[in-house]
Length: 201
Image (tube, rainbow, N blue to C red; front, side, top):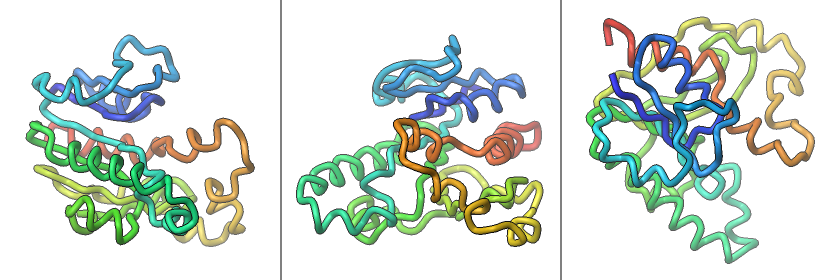
């Protein structure tokens, strides 16, 4: 199966699919973190019509995420960026690919109106896939079934201090903070590959 992982530079989801024998490629404006030959550096819009069977897309969430909605009323320059981000999100959903998963945090009300895609098909958490952490992530699905949990560690997670179970929220400022926060958890990447690209998918 030909798999496109849009807006990914870490290679984590791409590699999870490749381990199962799929012809998986990542694409991002940034070069791949792992210098993989299976990464396309550039605008993903230019490769959407290249005969993919499945796409997992991670469009930028800075201006769509509910956590950043308060900044819209403090900085007017963010509104045009919100419009562009919403248009790009819709382009991912409407791509000419049979099976699509678009991943993003929970959206604020303006983003939901602009994208007109409604609520996410499914909300997943890292603790559903073996990570003792919290980070609600929405999946908008087309032609795919919702993911099922592979290793629920919620009980163990709640025994941890907030700074551990919400590690990404408490990350100190750094040049790489945004990259760390946006990288897909390995357990979730593996679940995507096994459930959407496995023999019984």
